[in-house]
Image 1 (spheres, rainbow, N blue to C red):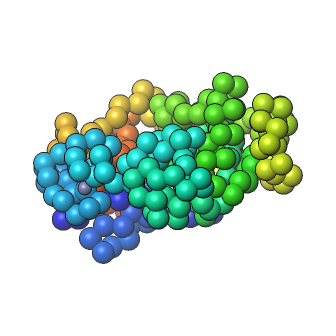
Image 2: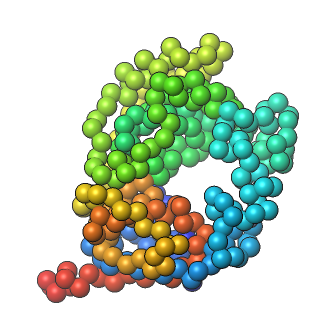
Length: 271
Ligand SMILES: [Zn+2]
């Protein structure tokens, strides 16, 4: 038994997904058409190491949710970051380390165009985690707060959330991200305009999906306890199963589970 962690991704012709569990790395792309079983033990483990029956909120235990810098307000609202001003929220040393580093504002097409932010080192990983099929860097800033300020300025003109049902329904229609970037430039506050990047490279991303669900049904371990099905694809942090079912791996981080796979019976019979 081991705790679920989000899948690691690698940008190739098609995104390569690995699920690391019980010291084993499963290449999810190779498991398409295989049966996957995820059995929940009924326990979850917080990033602080505490084991319990359920999380208090957002995959944190009660003390972590209220005290850990990982669960502070500015994590959810980057425009509230203050470490660059030497103002502490929960742990100034941690916040300085996390916030005062290059960040990107990007535009991505996952279920339509959206704006988002990411730490410099996370770029493409974030786009793959969100199931974006196209993305472009909009601005590069020296700290998280500035990226939050730009995002806030753009939010009234473009979405800042992924519609995950739509993202999982099909590959989105192509959009002209360069034209959108040029259009949105006017809404950036003057002092932040200098951070808009000149490079207009659009990254195109393809996912290993054999069959998109027709009507998405989301699986939750709290309700099902056991998830078993034929893997039909992987997109964002979702496993797409047969019968229109999807499972958000990231939302179940910290769930203590048994994970196993077996070749699909029908497929085995063909050989
Ligand atoms: Zn905790």
